[in-house]
Amino acid sequence: MALKKPSDGTRHMRNLKKIYRKFLRNRLILAFIDIKPQNLPRIMPFVRQYKKYKSISTEQISVAPILGDDTTTTNIDPHYFYQAIWTAKHIAQTHPPEHVDIGSQAQFVASLTVLTKVKFVDIRPLDVKLENLTNTKGSILDLPFSDNSIDSLSCLHVAEHIGLGRYGDKLDPEGTKKACQELTRVLAKDGNLYFSLPIGRERTEFNAHRIHQPQTIIDYFSGLTLIEFSAINDRGHLVLNARPLDFKNSQYGCGLFHFKRT
Image (cartoon, rainbow, N blue to C red):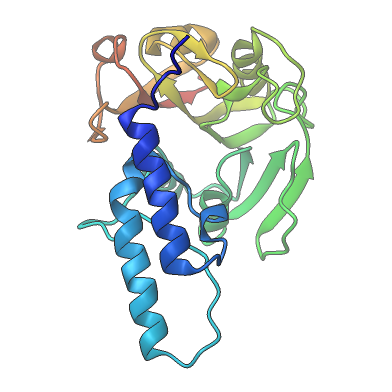
């Protein structure tokens, strides 16, 4: 039986490895490079820069390749970038004496402390000391608050993960729904909830996240009044005061929901 010939891609990878070994003389650079298809064109320029830098420097140099940062614009994750601005603006306008956040991005939580006192709750609490910040260990499925007790509340890009085991939580297909119910339970009368998660064609991508249609989330918070729906579309653009129906077939948008208990 004839042996299967290696593909062009396999041969190309083998040739690249030979080149690395030749140029870098067994400095184990391959152990540090993330060899993905999009990185292939970037590897040889890195090798050339490395050799040139060595020739002009008397420093002791080790290898720690970072590829792909030589972009024409600064890379951002539009979901996290715009949701932070959107939520912080609302909180700045209402200026609550204390704000409670459930599991959102650490940098966002830290930035809120310049606006007001912040209580942060997560199953993996922040191990930091910061003025105006209180850290509490707790689950979004069993929040350490009484019914109708929180006046200002946020939960950004969190609920889509609940029940998928990614963060050590118990597997539960209804994790997102139960998280929404618990947020509803603790929100006070006239309280504001700022909530976000991926929106579009409904599906679960295990164990990364779930994607929900906007109307599903509105239904999950049926005990609250929707004050505003804004969104980040599939092109990464912020759309203020959007129509939920327009995003039901998105591939991977982000819904920004402002709810209020009236």
